[in-house]
Amino acid sequence: MQVLSIQSQVAYGHAGNSSAVFPLQRLGVDVWPVNTVGFSNHSGYGVWRGTVYEASQVADVVTGVAERGVLPGIDAVLSGYQGSPDIGEVILDAVEQVKAANPRAVYCADPVIGDRGRGVYVRPGIAELMRDRIVPAADLTTPNQFELELLAGGPVGTLDELLDAVAALRARGPRTVLVTSVEVLDPGGDTISMVGVDPSGAYVVTTPMLTMKVVAGSGDATTAMFLGRMLQSGMDLPGSLERVASSIFGVLDHTRRTDAAEMELVAAQDVIANPPTEFAVERLV
Image (tube, rainbow, N blue to C red; front, side, top):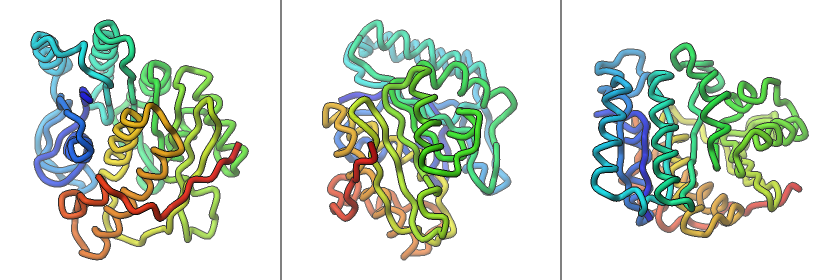
């Protein structure tokens, strides 16, 4: 399996490609990372150094990869945080190139816009790009609940509203939608869920809510592991959802217990490849 991953990169910590590449590799997937930004650390620290790359620079790297003749062997394109709308257009062009070379390839888009508490944290124009161009082009998309509300254009306060919002997204293009960090199923906040929907149905998996000081990059890692599991399983949504939920919970629980400032992806790598089957998937519809 081979994945072309086009997203941000940080020198310290885990976000974007710095959060997605290792989990995919630990699952046995080759990854060709193309970075859209080069930052010292993720923006959650409030202060960082580095630069957003010009769209032409990102496109040049994609061209160089294509010149190696590897596009027919790429099984998926993965995208996440995008530093500018122009970079989004480069990503969409890369998806077209890969799918022309391998019609079986899929595009997995993590529509990074923001989250509860922080609100929207991307540059102006990115949210609209995600809604109007990126998500419709995707085969799989992985918004969190906050992003789902923005993309679908309405609040999500109940399970029915969640499923309606997912249906609205799927009607615009993606075959599969994974909603991460679903909170509406437990207003008390003791648990958190992920809901996945594809043509076979809607599924939910629930884990305990962990109280911890850092979750930065967890969405990037979740999307990467989900894509890897889906590719390996022939797009088995419930099976992939079960493994990913167990894996990301294991990583975050290890991070919580060690009181680390960043996700302990390397130290907890065994649960990425061989997650304990602690959390069962239930069918919703």
